[in-house]
Length: 171
Image (cartoon, rainbow, N blue to C red; front, side):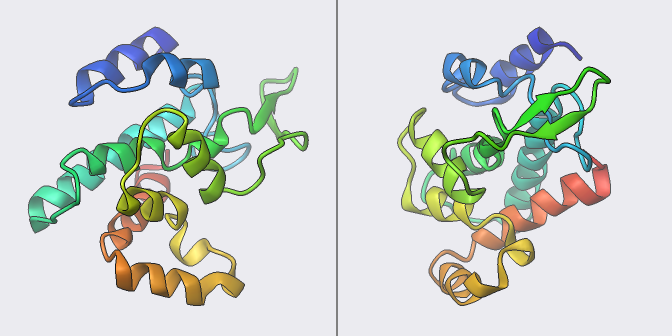
């Protein structure tokens, strides 16, 4: 799939194709999702985010999950890994290497900051994006993660969707 195909799919899939130009400027449609794990190829970040969003919507529908905003499954799913924009540099052999010169470190925090530059997030969206790593979060922060789940239980569904896309679908 080309970058143009991904942009077209994004526009058709999203109920409101928010932030297309800003996402394109960030490199969202071309970035890999990782340097050596799931989605470690050009466009892998979009492909991963698309799969996460599809699964989050499916779970939302099947379990009749209520969100603060109807758009939240789309926003959280698509924007949960924005931190990966500009995070990897392409090597001459086509592989990707972590970019140590990133000025905004962090995974969930960086994704929230970048998402807030594109649209206004609800508190629930902020918490879900920030803590979407779930069990892969730094164990020192598990108490705070637990508190986030208590206040925003829908957080568990983005963790599930992210793991489904990366571990089961493989992107």
